[in-house]
Image (tube, rainbow, N blue to C red; front, side, top):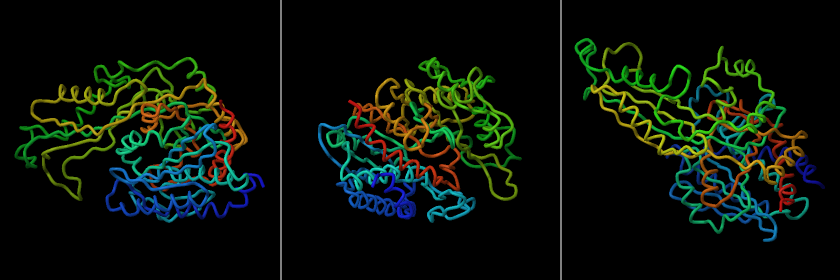
Length: 454
């Protein structure tokens, strides 16, 4: 029996096992789910053992890591697979058509929190490798799994874990499936990710909420001030107004722009899918370039004053907003956060007090495009999907990819099995069953193609 035949024969079983994995409410952001995360890690480790891996649940300063390995021969390449078993909070719950932790199939999609990000994609590799082990008795490469439980809370403890276990994690290349295909019919290899810098800005006014009639016009309103300051963060051409923000930003290379031009991207379809009438962004760059290789600054949420039912005529004592900035390679998160803080304090009126909390970040990364690993990944995708991939970049961030390079000296192959409209981080997250199957096939083919790399 071939690995693909094994996958066909176990189709129902694999789906049931994925459903079990998805049923764990492994929300790393909420302390109330600590037990659920531990139980999920234990289940995953036991599942890997059942396949033939040696596996253990290893503690960190937060939620545990699942480590597993299948060592064949030290002379063969060693592949380190990374994934995460934690998921985003499911709220707002009222927008889900089915319960987030009770997986349901509708119109060819699996609906559940974590379906694509990242349980479903990680499970593709586990099942693909299982199909090779069960049909050939071994693997053509050495395999290690590192599956964490804190990716959705910025992988706070994983870099320390990696530094502590450098020998255990020694490998030749990392494989990560936490990105998307280019479209439903076009698979992709991602060769770059943006980094991120995260902050929260507070504007303080009077020491308590005060009557807007008695004090309005005489003192600064923190909400008004914050909105004014946020409006000054961008120039009229869509660029970011912070001095020095672009000092480390490089222009797109000719090779990058050539790859992007090959992609069948239609702005009309893009707008329709998002339900918007017009696009917006930095002048002088295409939509894909704005999304993948240019830095950004966005307010993710803004809070201040009374927001309940009816009216409450006050000037609030404070207002706040959360800001994230997507970074391109060579931009340093700490430097960018410091520049933001300096600019905000410069433009703030003396009638308020400003505080900026910096929540960390990660640098952007590029994957070398001229080596054999990328070709091997492309070959496996062609086998699994029946069509060769395009090469693209991704606007999102996977901070640990930078740590793999910095700490272990390893490049990462970014092979996405999901779609950009899979509603990750949103209600009704989903994973198309066809993509799950193609992901498993690609994962079954990948060991053979990677084994050829010398």
